[in-house]
Length: 204
Image (cartoon, rainbow, N blue to C red; front, top):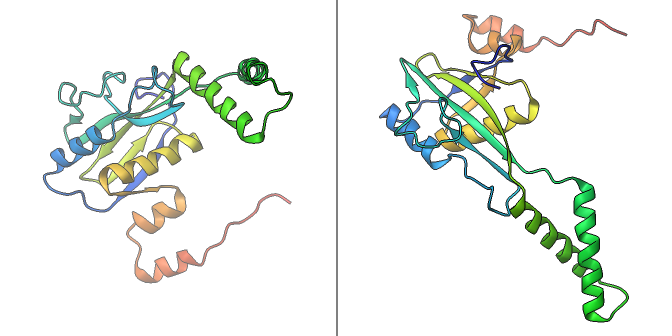
């Protein structure tokens, strides 16, 4: 989901840790090292990485600026290939038939069947293009805040993992409890009381 969409979902994070100096160069290095790889002509079925905000099908961060004022703005792209099960079954059955005819046998071993299925998946993945999913994010490094434009569980989990690998920083999702514990001016006594709170159920 993009920043410029007519409607957006946002997850707010606290960025835990200190980014190494020089900050801009460190971020640029992380973006380039973990930029998304093209898999349209590869057997891989999934790729996750960073892409440019103003051109999500480019990973040239030298040509496409990612710094706006005190905010880093870029995108996470997840490219995934999805092959219908019936297509896989069709080609698997055809390959099984060919292997049996060429070997003169009536049955194939479990290992051979797995090899055939893996081969079929690799061939089909080479033919099918990947579907891109683009998620924008805004990172205010001075305020230690990051806004990710998605509430999807899978996308958020991928972001948290990729961000830590790229910048050696931890993302902590902000919701009422974590906001109170991390960002509000509570005293130590008040924080101790906060840690003792338990959820209240309003339904039977």
